[in-house]
Image (cartoon, rainbow, N blue to C red; front, side, top):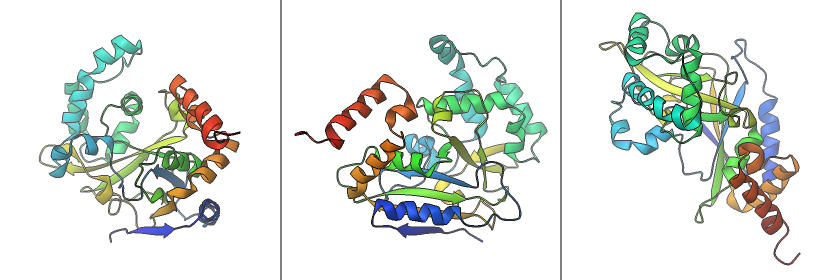
Length: 283
């Protein structure tokens, strides 16, 4: 049975907060998931879908779902020496491609997340690359609806009428070998943004039994069929005109670009927003 996305249109920022409170009060299921029961993802337009940076960067490869985990791993493993040289970070336990291929082949009958759970350095490297702009099959989520709201309202295209915050209500595992979606986080050694943003990540794959490999599945489709029957996917849309009210409230909670990114660029952007956007030019 395919899971549908339930869209909830609110008219004010305070209405969104009320919906989050209502969502948080939903009783737990009998099978509790590992980690937060609800995860959120904010987008600067309600017209945007749940796409990974890999899907957006290489749409031709993604259209026919031909890009495999082995091919992707070979690319990121090849980038390792350059990344280590310029960052002075090390991933000494990252398997070489032949070792990784053997790992998949020897455990082809297991869920991919169970395989990768035993190789934490692979996850840590994937997450590090994701936070620094390498096209990634990971879709990032947060345990905080307010962090998600900051990402939704932070930078909005001029012609956008509504932003959105996705919420996935998790009640245990599910899926099939054709479309299996799983979540990972938060205990790993990686970039500090991972912890500041309360990050979790999803990956959607399908098993190719002829090659003992995994093919990446588009999140927009796989999340509606690769989850368990008790899961729920919600999409809250909020008018873009509520941006000032939302950002002011989030600022009072110390949720701003600097608190989530910690860079000099985000510091200056946060200060500029406080001085120009919140106070106005004539104060």
